[in-house]
Length: 84
Figure (cartoon, one colour):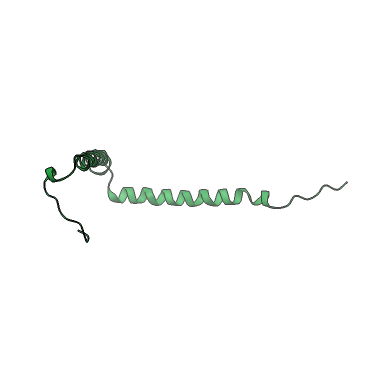
């Protein structure tokens, strides 16, 4: 605990508003953990599979970035004036 903070072990010592906020926060955390369980615990992929997939994704994003960068190179060059 930081300076000036004290532990209040009993909910009867806390304001009802604080207790309600803590109950809501706890419920949100429990729901978040339930949501993560499917992808993290029940998932059928291994760490190596996820790591390889992420590497491919990063490589594809790098290629897309190059394509987008080069796509506008022609637009940056001034167009030649038409000769009359």
